[in-house]
Amino acid sequence: MIKKRRWRLLTGVEPTEMDRKIMYWENKGKEVPTRKLIKTPEQIAGIRKAGVLNTAVLDEVADKIHEGMSTLEIDQIVYDFTTRHGGIPAPLNYEGFPKSVCTSINEVVCHGIPKATDILEEGDIINVDCTTILDGYYADASRMFIIGKTTPEKEQLVRVAKECLEIGAQAAVPYCFVGDIGNAIQKHADKYHYGVVRDLCGHGVGNEFHEEPDVMHFGKKGTGMLLVPGMVFTIEPMINMGSWKVFTDADDPYGWEVISYDEKPSAQWEHTFLMTEEGLEILTR
Image (cartoon, rainbow, N blue to C red; front, top):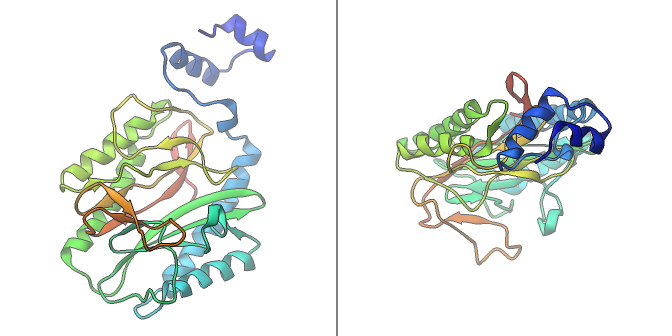
């Protein structure tokens, strides 16, 4: 148990109101963030700028994506736009990932690798997942795109996946827990008998590509890490039309592409968020 006097001895300063709230939950045995996870105003300003560029990259993709183009062309758009504006595509060469963006079509849940042979067709749904480094800071977001006219079932999946992101964000208030987000998302997806992917999650971001906490998109209220003002993280639910289970494509030589277990369509939306005293601020769209 960390008491006020011990805190002063450890830090040399009086605890702030936020420090006292963190200590309260830590004394109750809850997982709480380290100081490293609470961003400084300077860091937040840098992440916010990276978020502006990341959003602009996805806007550029939205303006140019069309039936008949390859996912490799999307990758080139992302690389050219990002570097032209002083940024670095974070996925490029990250742990062996060979491209600048993830392009996941239909049953590919996430981490789809852009290819010249993957041609967008009428009715496809595709997730474009973009992470940008600007001046050493990271921002991360993904969007779904429907190519031409698709089925009502796919349209509903894309819509509900976006609603899951929005509902998860609404559940995230200062001094709530990560599990509150996942619980809200799971309840909404369950209404449609969709599977919420459990093997992948959102994450802290900003100073690095992936930081603590892991933001699971299912679970129980009051579990996981305490979320406090100054923390930056993604919410990015992956919603499957069928089972929540997934597998890694054995034909992918890089070991990245994740596919729904029953090979039914999957959809995902993602924002980077800053927790403030008033609630979440969206840093990427």
